Image (cartoon, rainbow, N blue to C red):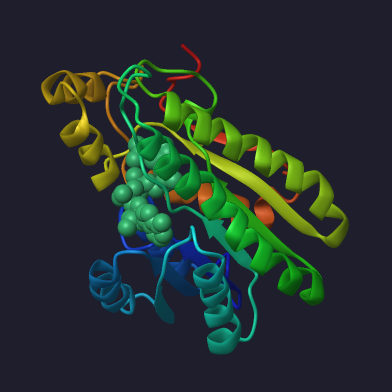
Length: 253
Ligand SMILES: NC(=O)c1ccc[n+]([C@@H]2O[C@H](COP(=O)([O-])OP(=O)(O)OC[C@H]3O[C@@H](n4cnc5c(N)ncnc54)[C@H](O)[C@@H]3O)[C@@H](O)[C@H]2O)c1
């Protein structure tokens, strides 16, 4: 019997990196999983690969759109009859000092990382209340806790995620919905690579990643997925509005 046997989860941004690792671990633990992603092509191939581990459905869409978020939630309801766990994982990064940061990049980061959670939560909560409860896991970051150079948009977005999580957690616990934030440190995913590729000094950014945390390595996405499993399952029964930091010691430094 798995830790999520008989449950249904929706994972946004599930076609890559941490979201994909969470989807696989949840399937291994007996969960039925809906993965959503804006990248329809990767979503299709990842959904096929994940099929090896259990019952999975893919839905393409943009978490910034209320309508698309509604389709994601409805896919869980129509395909599996309920939604027990929502993992708001989709996010984009930004390494750009304030002097270079454009309004367009600011809007893209804040809209994806923050509004992209609001849209899913808005659609998921009525179902969870009707069912008698649920769990919501949001992806924060160590960078929602401490500021790092050249990251005002990303720092602001992840700080907002952590406070959004706490705020809805205190409102929703009366409905038996537990909301918590998972705050990874540096993790080996395509998003990390994008940070290198899009930075003003890619070599410098790559070197900084390698020696970022006291543990002197980056995390494997599976190590972060274990945190999502804890927050989505019954083992975290007293966690409400908490931020689970898995960062190799970065914020302890
Ligand atoms: N990788 C890290 O070091 C790290 C550290 C801390 C927090 N995080 C957070 O973890 C989450 C996952 O990051 P990752 O490293 O796996 O990234 P990733 O780029 O590998 O995966 C993110 C996925 O989200 C999807 N996505 C992006 N915008 C979307 C949108 N508007 N609608 C739907 N899907 C969208 C992408 O297509 C992609 O498949 C993010 O919220 C990120 O901020 C990552």
